[in-house]
Length: 254
Image (cartoon, rainbow, N blue to C red):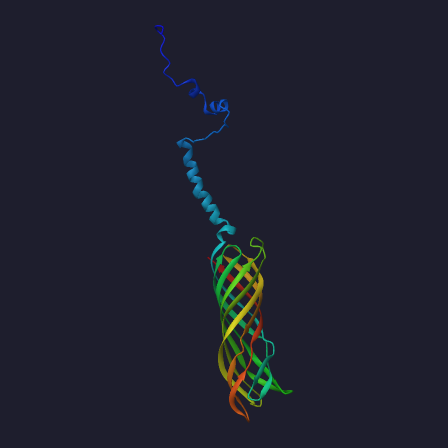
């Protein structure tokens, strides 16, 4: 070793090369890892909550899940209902009536939602027909229904969103009626298994408010009522109940 020449204390030439070049020479693929300085990391931390706020503010994301309440009203149309018992076989005709209701529900995503629905409808008795004889009727038939419903909402990003639904529950049918000649008098109620089918559309007004309208078919198992039949006495009559309903309402989401 000559005087005045310092030994090379640095790393070997192989290690002194940049990693990318060093790996190219050995025939292995080139990889580069970018590590940001600390001064550049703070803006990224600020962007994370910013993107979270945007996600929550986006209606398609914010409304994917959550709760809602709705209120509805409409028209209930009951077809002629069969009535039999005590030697009487006939039909009861009801006038178109009203229906009101409310629901508390939860969305399980952008498509499915479930709800508990309470509704009440009432129709006036028009006439009673038996063995070809038509008698003017009076009184009314009221039905309270408590249902558990499942819905599928389609086109969740469209301005008009169709839906289909089905549900099961119970119906309380209350009959208070007679005819002009007081041949048949019924004043009784019956609790029955109920089911319904729904179809309609929802129109969002804002992230929290929507309008909806649709059709509902409600039916119960055949009810039985205590009745008085003139000339025969007291007994039991068996009827039926189903209704076609058109409803419109307001929904509040939260």
